[in-house]
Image (tube, rainbow, N blue to C red; front, top):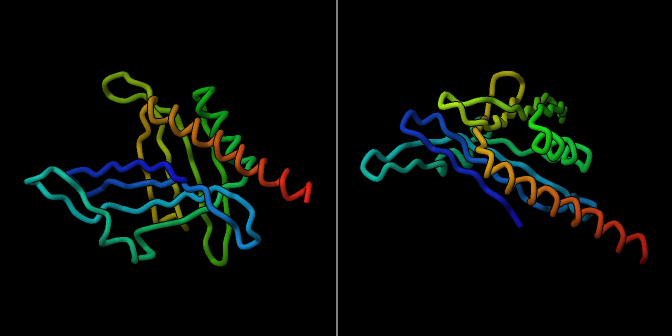
Length: 155
């Protein structure tokens, strides 16, 4: 199961984020977050594309969030506050940031960004309605993780 947010724009600076329930190598349920930078814009149809960056490791990123990080995101959404985390894997240092902000029109929203090694940045704005949907998906993810652990423990 997955939840996706696509935010292309005419400046070709948009990103697409996908939150997906997957399995670790040990077959445990977990949450993967992937992001990809926009690769093009079609002015005639007013649509953006991301597919040309799918195989470029500089233009996409994948991270895994544990249940405490999921809880941190849920808390940030509920309290309209900030969540951040830091991951290291191989030679990569990844900063995760989820922050509230006020748009130019006064509407509240969130900014979600992932930065790899300080120079590869992936970011997306999340409207409050989208944050509510993300919150429900994150809660569902936790239920999946905990349910599976309960089943495995009883076997």
